[in-house]
Image (cartoon, rainbow, N blue to C red; front, side, top):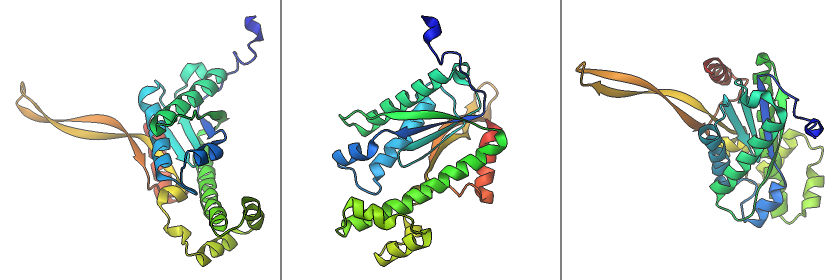
Length: 243
């Protein structure tokens, strides 16, 4: 029967991204009373779920990038020998558990996942693509829920926004008192989770001298640069080269 495990020998080589997306999160979050279009408590829990994966899963992603109900994890060290069935089951199941624990909710939440193989020079391009999607999600979500709050049905709001240019959506929001460029950075650009090194001071009593040691910690960056910018490119390059 072993040969009937159709994905048991399917493997991927690094670097690759594992992207997870929430399954039916919209309805679940509405039932649980989360605010729309964005809820800070939910964003905190998403960041914490990614941080928990860094600290407690035994996996070693280079970085995690999250916005809305999406998480992207970059791997250069291959867990489980690159076995796709393992990666596509353990990563989303861990994150589903971590998010449920962080939110302290009774309703179970689930992610699905996919693996995106990349070349090293495609990593920034991929992250730029997802960050652009974060921006589109931001402006469209604000516009949609603004129209709903003014009395339009969800169907009418979706139809009104369909095929609108970005500039038109900006103008719509501005007419309703929303300057989209002033909303919190994490809503516009997403959240980046990664490891960083830092130094600590100490004292060696045998040598009778002050010492400095290097430690590593996991950090959440809620005010990240645009990835194509010089600052953003330098940040991503530093994470890739240090990993």
